[in-house]
Length: 329
Image (cartoon, rainbow, N blue to C red; front, top):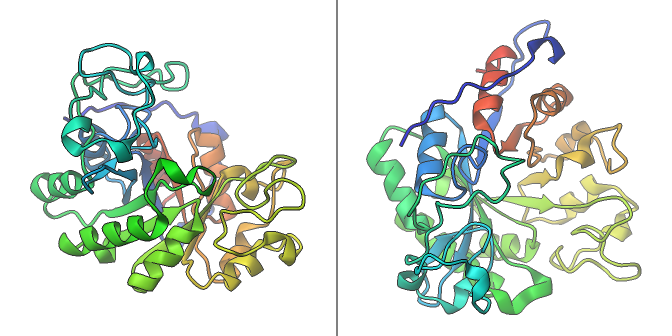
């Protein structure tokens, strides 16, 4: 399925480059193209590939029979999927992916619901669409886009605060590494997670696989860098951000299992109350900076001007058009 959607961008509000920048830039489709088609489905990944993204971002969980499935939530989401009988999932006890088989998961309709019509007014539904396995995503790309060298940004959905919801970081990491090796895409994969224990486990298995440290932090609120007062964050694989006096670059350098840095975008905007450290300081420490999830052209343009190495977006069509206007395509 290929759906052409022409984005509306007010070019008068864009920052105009004086010359073509001598840099590469990674355009990453969040959950495929979540703003345009149901997230984490084959049609969404197909559209993102058709648009020409550099990387497909997707989330993975693992079923009771060991199949990696593409899903953001540890359970079947009532906002995204309908029960096999066509009724709302809300009517049933919590359906954890780890307690369902892949055959069970395939019974749900994950293409008939728009989780946020206000945020995603353009999203076109695909009734009856199933939750794919990660292997099916690889196979779809190889079959329909055989010449593509698209990257895969694979987020392992593990949460140290809800450890019983999923398999352990070590089990998760081993399964992901084995699958990307089986499909011969290990050199086109970035494994990312908010739970840095996953990244450490991946590097112990195969140091050549690229990893990205996800961060979610808002000023004055518990996040993945700073937990509640007086307690080290459980997301950082034993590291303690407080020891580095707010110097994120130093924290990353001391985490020897991290290759890239991927924070919520507000932490990179100097005018934001959530600002932590500049893009340049983090890059100078040796880490490409890939913020998430950036959906409006003006913010995309500001972050590009700040020098980020890529963007994760629900609207890859908007980002790719902007990159063309900036001379980055």
